[in-house]
Amino acid sequence: MAKKAAKSAAKKLTVTQILSPIGFDKKQETTLRGLGLRRIRHTVEVPDTIGIRGMLHKVRHMVKVEGL
Figure 1: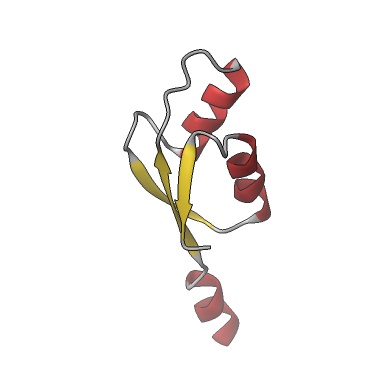
Figure 2: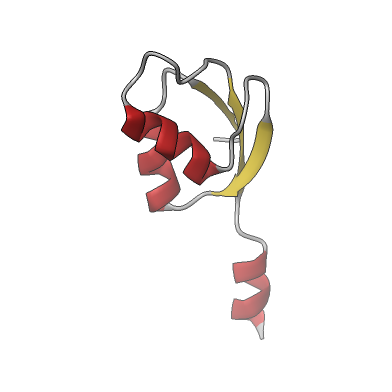
């Protein structure tokens, strides 16, 4: 029972898009979409996982991350 409670209280990261993907590689635009970001100043909460951190690293110049 305790394991389920710990799993549901996983850490979240707040990600805000600060730059447009226009002029950047198409894969970076796809990564922003995968994170749930649609436009500049759009903010989403994502779980703090290794996969998400890899995606954030790929587009680190286009996003602002809080909650690290």
